[in-house]
Image 1 (cartoon, rainbow, N blue to C red):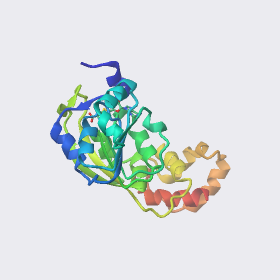
Image 2: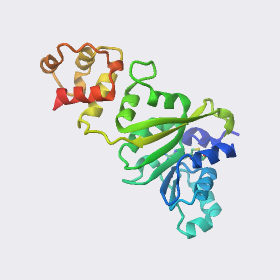
Image 3: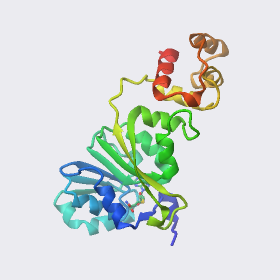
Length: 258
Ligand code: SAH
């Protein structure tokens, strides 16, 4: 049965116990503070609690599911082992947590990645659409490589863990899934314009860097003359945008606007 909420909230529940179990055991959760994105009816939450974490903070946007969760986990909640938060993860005010985990709604995958870069965490284990995971991990100069790959790779080390077929979900989604693990990178400081420059460049992914910047001058509010002046620093630079790794984008950002 497909409900309206399947669509709005991306509610596809993982019905394969083995996959739920595997997911909860990918990393050691003992004594860790764990945040779960989109707890649903608590099937993954239950497996997480079995790993004896210090605490699970379960975020769920759907109020009805939160009521269910509160009933189902009355004991764990009263023991302080679990907290249910009825909120949109994208609006959640959180700075630091040990582990983030979740079978996340696919329609907001990019936004989740962008939100994660503002949180301090050790590891994030996420089940997302297979193609999206592959884009995140794609190296430069491949057809899957784009802005979200460069951003994700600037902030995280990305490890593909396992593929999970759509047959394991109810209701069955159109696409297969993949579990990936992100670890925060201890990066040398990124230019404060790294993201703006990434957006400007990848607006013209197949162009060479100079042309891309020229065509994206409105991103920076530059006149034709101003952009011409800036591009003098890139005289012999003939790489195409989709070939740039995040370090190169960072160097361009520093040269261009600092
Ligand atoms: N953890 C369950 C459910 C996964 S489905 C399982 O593994 O089977 C994704 C869940 O995320 C749904 O329960 C949906 O209501 C919830 N959700 C969707 N958007 C959300 C958001 N922005 N913030 C928090 N939860 C969200």
